Length: 318
Length: 178
Image 1 (cartoon, rainbow over the protein chains, first blue to last red):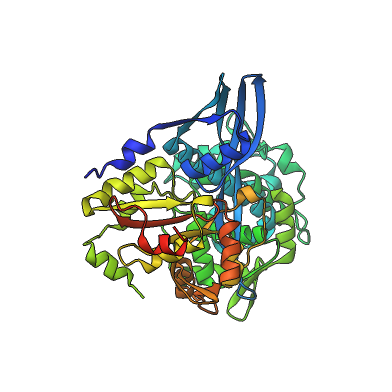
Image 2 (cartoon, rainbow over the protein chains, first blue to last red):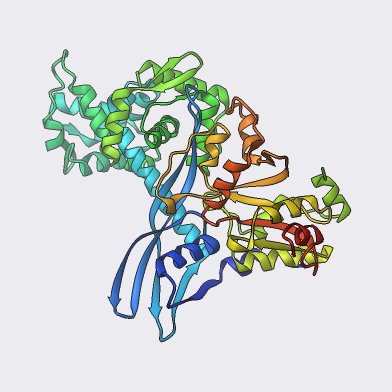
């Protein structure tokens, strides 16, 4: 008995034909639901000429949204334009060839992951001013804060002074400066740095102002992916993943929902399948920290999202 | 009532979760396929036990056939696909979306009386274990069942395992007047 069915099947291109007399779209969608996924749906099509048509196909994926105040909800989330197929009209039938299911699945995962990244961006925009008050995130961003705040005061800093500050890891200085220069917060000239346009617009000398918060929130928002991928500053990851595991289902439900730690952990497994997961006590601690900064509020043993955050998130996510 | 374990024991049938996932081409998020290749792969596996899968739908399937399958001790319990509106009946909200977006929900039919259908739904079991459902409900009225079954993407879809090469069965022929 063959135990290597997966390789044989998943790498095979699926081809079939449909009778010319059938309702093409109805028969096509039925066939795709049989051969690819029950979530297959037609996004749009365009005709190249009278005999060739391209169809863009999306896949829905079911998501369970927990709400301890109400009943749980199931939504089928559409992931659009996962793959395309070409249909050739022959003399007596339509000829249809699909990519392999393995390729379709990889593309589905990629599209789903980009939807989640888009949601993360929307969430950072909606919560940046609150996130940067969290002590661990402040620590993670401290090297940038030190450089920017001193530069704002002094208007020029010799790079060798920064090298001295980080003499145990000099390679990081170049990364920090390149990052800040790339975002136009600083200008590097020979052995000095000077304020860039994006730094000069903030008034950091006013002790009563909010500009320090605004600057760091902007840096976090605009530099999110660079900080994560290039600088390997992962301190933000647990906060972002946990809050997204709440706010994304809430966005699907169209309202703030009531979830406990276990619900958030289950949601996280669905949204970040590769992530190994936190223990319950770690989740409780991260949620406590975020609740203190009004990203969530507690109600009994559940967490409820902040209405203002949800509305901003929804409008950013569109 | 027959038992699933009795059917499995009688046929000495066992399969690992990984193997059945491979046969069904299961992938997290997009589920299984149910086309010709899937039937071929499943029959490759079942033929070693002198069994085969039978799948019917549309005009080739009806309520009498469903009853005949679960009454026949040589057959497995039938699995059926229901439109997701069924979920509202078991305590999970589902608002209608674009019909193409929706997945059929699969349950196993265990029996019937004059008014109700009794079934097993692994989704309910999972939800109960997480404390996500207030009430365990494994029966619905025949009227509702018929509506959900016939409004599924694959209307009146039924799948069951039966002895190899056995064709029509006595109970069904008698009930349908054949």
